[in-house]
Structures are given as C-alpha cells and as structure tokens.
Length: 74
Image (cartoon, rainbow, N blue to C red):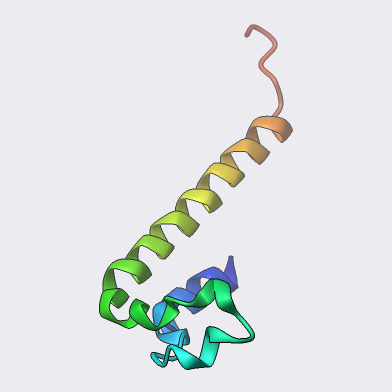
C-alpha cells in the first residue's frame, strides 16, 4: 500500500513514457502509441489511481471476508 500511495502522489504513469515514437518501434512494438500518452496524462493518471484503489479495496474486502470470524447465528 505504501508504494501505491507514494507512487500516486509523487509520479505520473503517463509521464514515464518518452514522447518519441522511434524509441519504442524496434524493441517494443506493442508500445507503438506510447508517445501519445502525454496528451492524455491527467485522465490516464486519474484512471490508473482509481483502478489501483478499487483493486486495493476489493482485495482487502475479499481478504477480510476470508479471515473474519463467522457469526454463530448467521
């Protein structure tokens, strides 16, 4: 959780990609459009945070459901 919070506060996912198409063309063809991420940086970063937060909360809820003591009456 520490890395999720610090990473969200201190860095940008979209800014981690160079905006030069040629950087990815040979070695990473699946990242051929990564240079376009900078144009959508805010939306991508907020979406990545929301996705990560949802995964974290749902994971904790599932873990609690498995570990919480069961009610004797229910």
